[in-house]
Image (cartoon, rainbow, N blue to C red; front, top):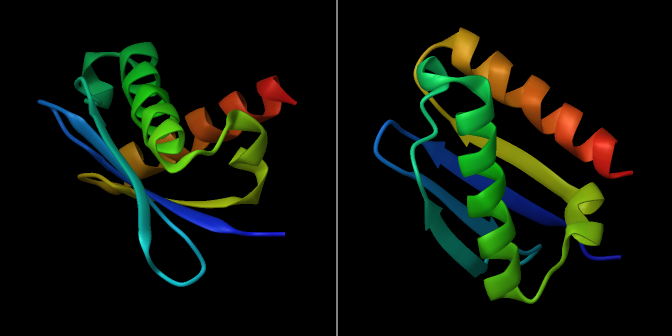
Length: 96
């Protein structure tokens, strides 16, 4: 079973997602709206999920593949990183 890594760069202007495979090759990329957690958790989560889902679509992957992904997020400050991790866990558990 293939495993994937998804990297998130969430910023105030936009959120970018990139997916790589086990050979470290980029297989999908996408960009969405602001992921600034200070503007609201729902806005940030929506932008993060939108970027991930768009990158997955460009890679030919679906949400069923999310369980096999390792998530890496870039953000400013440990509280933002912790919030992103909580939001991601909540989203993936609510999809199960």
